[in-house]
Image (tube, rainbow, N blue to C red):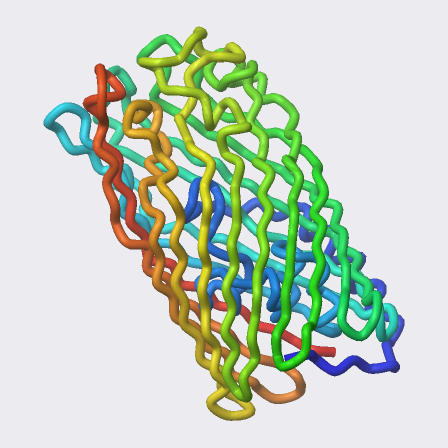
Length: 404
């Protein structure tokens, strides 16, 4: 539903938006994603609908999916967090190792703010978290990886501008700023680098939405590769001398409003293989030594992701949601050994969600996602071929929204 806007905008909102941009760029909460390093969706309302949102903007996090949608959500502020319970790990040879033995609960903050400049344009900020990680026992030795653990935390902030071209079409553009922190332990047992480092980068996000009438809306979005600075601490471990970028992704969506019910479907394509640290073959098949351009990677394949959701307004105050999210296989079974540090085998998600309108333009939203446990069995010569990887997750999100 399109939110009404007000022509009366107190001057303190300008200060509020500036403060949110500054504070948002300092966020870097722990994150463990459901598809590679990405979560299944951005914003609690979208998460409840399987992540669908390219053609359906619902809150101030819409700019992280399609910046054009920010002109649809009105003046608002959204603050939220996701609580992620994981069950991940690996089997090396005949021994199973629990990748969540020392840490299984992760917290992911999110923030969204939007201000209408006039009836046809808006500026906004959407801050989200990406990442992946493991926490094996300190006594574990997995093929020479001693006490392996890893945590990649990415903060991605999209500062967006959206404008209506006419009554039916809107476009949006966003400057994407990212900070990531990577911690890895375990490779020291193989004489390879371990420790902690961080890097920064920038990219762009573009989007379009169009309303066809009869309740139908279309959307399209593109996010460029975020070029991150190199991590010197891992020059001898990650391909291209410590380079770990955020991959480009693009997609399209459709939404159909039928009375109190809204259906939404998204298609998203993620180009993991273009980032050599992620897409290069594993230790058995790599053409170069660790840290080189052709050095070992995680063997991640490009992914196609389908996101389907439904929302129904039961009353003026209560909206219920449900959805399903399905990605193609990310892990190559021939490149599993490095995946001990990032066993992202899961790719199917069932979701539920709800929003309840409170007094004075406020609302509370919740979403639950079950990422079903899946295992990828290693193939080919050792060590990649004798490494099986598994992942399953429970995801609970809560957000508080305020309309001005």
